[in-house]
Image (tube, rainbow over all chains, first blue to last red; front, side, top):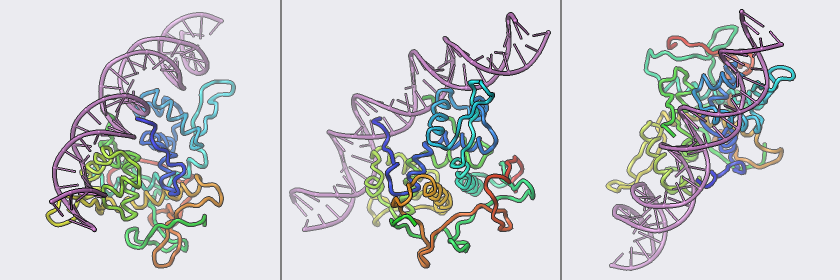
Length: 150
Length: 150
DNA sequence: TAGATAAGTTTCATTATGAAACTTATTGCG
DNA sequence: CGCAATAAGTTTCATAATGAAACTTATCTA
């Protein structure tokens, strides 16, 4: 397959993000981590992923600072995998994926999990807006530019 | 490899979303589509993707209703690939990925592209909030539940 | 009309993936 | 404690996905 091209040097933040996350499985691992899972076997059972692949993905996610491995018990060799701050900052990505999935991938009336605020029970949504807080129609009003970090 | 497990029947909208998008390349194709690209060769040059893979991905994205193929010229056989409404609804996902990338994958001062509102030039951001519009700390306040469509 | 692009498809070598078996650590529990 | 059951990986091997390049047609363009 000749080593997949890396996009770490791409000027586009989305491309780098996709590259950093790595793949399909990794994002599902992150989802489960948001769901409170920390152990190898939990991820394995939840995802049905092959052990060798899970092992490799956990290693990569850890190397990239999205997860961190902490010893499960003092002195023990078993690990718990926890989201780092960088990993937790993927939350909006998860919410965005979820929202799109709810909109387009379920038939009316079909059951699905929901994301709610713990205290109020209110549904969590996600809004694209300008810096000054004005919600913005995703479609029309944007363009992309290359520029200095701003 | 024994057919990758499909998640179309998963109760979790994020899992279905990841499954529907398919992979890394597909999301980059969608990104380029947001950037105005429509032609096979444009995607190919922009992404450096192998032609056979691009061909397959465009077919899949089209089959899943994220892109639609429209004849480039009346009577001609060349296609233009355009985002459908379903595809354009992936915008928040793109913005979320971009925002995370900007936050965590660039060194200070490093150049990157930015997403701005066309009219005002203001940066576009993305907020996680409850239905009533109250911004919410991504980390603390959420849980997941399975329930009837609501 | 000829040459140059565009848009794919085919072929073939290589890599990634998945399943299952195999290893060591850890944990429970009597 | 001691032994069976789990947990957490690693190894091996067959198979599927990927990438590069060559090969086809269709479509532009000068």
